[in-house]
Amino acid sequence: MYKLIICALIFSGILFMFLSIKKFRDNTSLMKEFYIDDSLIKPRAFTFHRSLLFLFLIGYILTLGFYIFDIHFASDLVTAFIFFFGAVFVFIENNLHKNIVSSIKRNYDKTIQISSALEEEREKLLSLNRKLTQTEDVTIFALAYQAELRDTITGNHIARTAKYVELLTQKLMEDSKYKDYVTPEYKVEIVKSAPLHDIGKVAIPDKILQKEGAYTDDEFDIMKRHCEFGADIIKRAMQKLNFRSFLQIAEQLALSHHEKWDGSGYPMGMSGDDIPLSGRIMAVADVYDALRTKRQYKDAFTHDQSCRIIIKDSGTHFDPEVVSAFKKLSDQFEKISIDFGDGA
Image 1: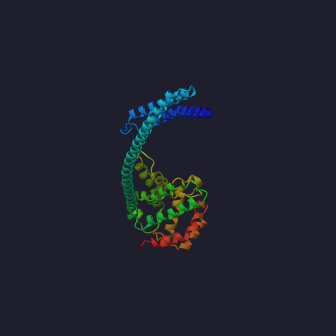
Image 2 (image 1 turned 30 degrees about the vertical axis):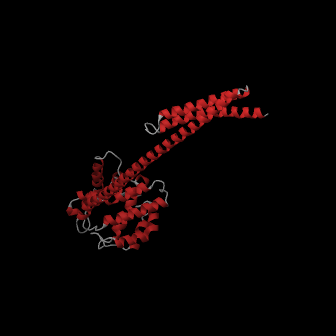
Image 3 (image 1 turned 90 degrees about the horizontal axis):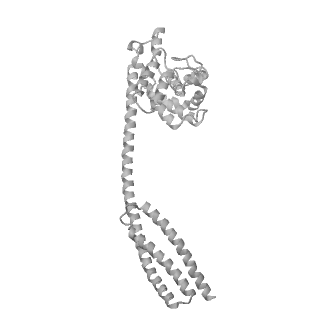
């Protein structure tokens, strides 16, 4: 019984040694892929390590045979060699582990250095992007201000309408049938585009743009063309780009902000959902501001009067969904109209 137990233990060792050799081959392949060209990982050490595994396997097999056939001297000699090479094996394995850990640390240090350098570059790029965005916003404002500067009656019109557009777009994004369409990116683009809605006024003669009093029919026909002029200016700018830009929304907005829900607007006579949403949003912002400010043909209306007019024209001039958002924001509209009044 005693001999059977010893034989079973030795045989089990042989099986585990077979599995260890297979596992060692798998690990060696993996480490060579991971530590490719690493000077700390020595191929000779792996070869010697593998050779020792085979020696152990042979030693276990011989020991089992000698023990079964009672060849004690040979069995003792093989056992002694196994003990000796076992110590050598442990030494080599510890050395390999040390080299592997050293390699991991060295590569980790390099990774940290690279990560730190990449983070610095990322911060530089973010800073550059912020500067480019600010430059873009200032350029847009400067372009829009050219038209506003000539149309001396409109004052801070572009600043106020941009804020109205931002309020309306945020509300539509949160609670409306357009919430799946109005994404955060769309909001950024339409707010950035809003100051350009009247850019076409740069093509309107001063004698019409700065006229005191009501327009004649011919003068109004010329004035209405600022929508087409604005869209053409923006379209020509887009042709210089080879990527999608917020100017696509700016072009829509410039062309369609005087269209009406019932189709009676200009310049295209579009109606309902055929009018770009950007134009429908801009229409409410633009008309509210026109009502609240003094123009050559009228005095300024009160906030309540302006709200009543816009609500009354829901479904005729304006998209009912946009008017619904406006009603929820009317107090904020009034505050903007006061804070950014022409005397501010």
